[in-house]
Every structure is written in C-alpha cells, then in structure tokens.
Length: 403
Image (cartoon, rainbow, N blue to C red; front, top):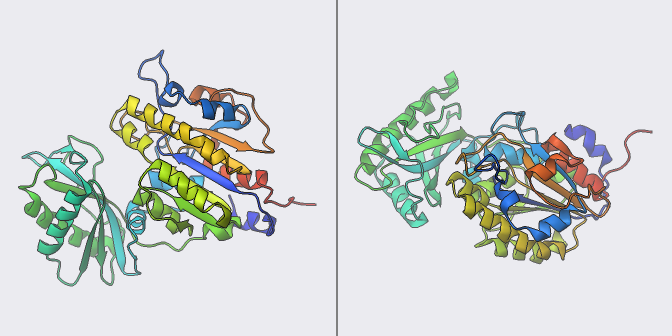
C-alpha cells in the first residue's frame, strides 16, 4: 500500500474501532492425508458462529511461496510492505524488552542452545531453560567477556532468548547470522555482508569465541547463536499512516518490539491470554486500533505439539465472547504465518483469516479453518497488506477516492 495514496482519504473524525487478534503461527497442516489441521480439529463454536457473519480468506505476508519470519509477517499485517520495510530480529527483541536503542547500537536476537562435543547443535532452545537461568548466563557473559572500546549489553528476553547489543561509533548491522536455524549443524561464523560491517563482524566473532569458552561447562545451555543484526530504522509511524490511535497487547517481547518500531503504544507484558483481554477491556475507550497477540499457538507448532496447539486455539475461542461484548466495529482474526506442528517450523502456507464487521458482506461459511477459508470471498492467497485498508473502510474511516 502506498501510504501517500491513503493519507488524503483518512477521515479525521471517524470513530470506528478495530481489533486485530493474531494467533501466532495459526496456519497448519493435517498430520495424515485424510486428517484435519490444528484449527480445523479445534472445537471453536464462537469462531464458527462469527465466521457465518464474516468474510473469509487466506493471506500471505511475503511473496507467495516464501516462508516469513515473525517480524516481517507482522509488518505485512500492519500494512507495511515487508520486502521494502525489512528489519533485523535484534531491533524487535531489544525494543520488546524496553531497551533504549541509540544511533550507535547494533542489536541481535540470541538463543542459548545445546551443542555436542563437536560443536553441533542438538537443541536450538536449550530445553527451553527458565528465564532466570537465561538471566544468570547473560550476567556471566557480561562479567567475563572483554571487548575493548565497545559497550556490551546482554538482556534476558524470555526462556532461552536474550538480546545482544553492541554500542560504539562506526558499527553496522551488515553482518550475517550465526544461527543456522536447524539442529544437526554447527553455528555459522559471522561475516560482513558489506565493507561497512567488517569491524562489527570481527567483534561478534570475538564475542562468540569468548562466550563459548565461558559456557562450555554449562548444561543444557552450553552455547548460543545470534541472528537479525540491525540498527534502529526511521519509518513512517502507524498512527499517522492510518490515522488511528493504536495499542499493542502482547506477552512476548519481540511482538511488543515490532509494535514499537511502527509507533504503537505498547502495554507491559501480560501474564496470560485472559490478562491480555482484560487489558483490551480496560483500555477500550482510549484507543481506536487494538493489536492483540497470542504466542503459544506458534510455540506448540514449533515443538511439534499438535494437540497443544489445538488446545490453545480452543482457549482463544473461549475468550472471544469477551472481545465481542466490547462491540468492535471490525474484528480481524488471523495469524502472522503458518507453523504446522507436522513441520515443527514456520512455513509458506497461507494463513486463515476472518474479517468481521457490522457492514461486512458475509460469506455464509459456518466454520473457521483452512479449507473453509479457501472458499471465502477474500480469496485463497490475498496480500496481508490489504487487511488494514479493508478494516479502515469497514470501520468508516476512509473517504471516497476520485470524483
């Protein structure tokens, strides 16, 4: 979407409220050819009833056939071209833990992991160590790693995740990941992707060498990998682009981070999905757009836990009446990408999407799932960046275009 095209069409006095409920990694696959996906398997009477009053479809956030990362996928949902507005995972993670990124900072997302005696990764998440263990390891590395002339920041994110930040003049995010994003492989060696990144890559290699020596006797987190090196971008802000006062509600730091990058107000992390809905209720009168993020659908998908993902979808369905009781003008229910438990990873498959509004043209389809959405009027592979203009139109927030 061309932001300059949409800006003159925004109604300044419009009052319609929009909720975007994102179940991370919602899309799935059947475990057997004759089976059902996680969403199709889940008992979702509230979503099914709402589907009959909604428009349905399957969206993709990046060019079709490409598997998206979570940051880029959410940018698509927020109406930003995820190919044009590319950002490293590190910035999102840093902002998600309220780290104040400065102009001389380069950030990366870190995973503590388990490696064998040959340095081969056997568990990318180190058994999902508790956050307090991750904090201890971050403090240990900060205490012992020596990088002269550079400030080093290590902040625990959640469980095995942490934020890595270097601060010095002349740094660059033009550095390749060390994370192979697969088990059975050794960590990559950080290399510069442009001449500007040479010094930064050298610093990262030194940090990795020292850090692995410090952690070698720890278990299960005896190593780490880094990805998404980047500095803070200067982008058009969501409230100005779409003319709506926006609030982000999410438990996990990365999704709070991507919301901050685009200029949303971000709530402190909630303790549970029910707490997220409570935050929505408590702030209903103060904002126009609400992004509500559910993480565990993705976590169970990555763990290969089909039944766990089904259960989380059912829990979200049980919370849906609380959202509907607020009487939103528009409610979008979707995911950012697919994470089939069958694959234990993100995938390129398009994502089920429900667009409910008082003035929506209902498809009359009485269930919410992948095969049902294929039949919907939104199409079987529409672009995620089309969701925000459709939502604004249904909320009565756009003027007519042209004479």
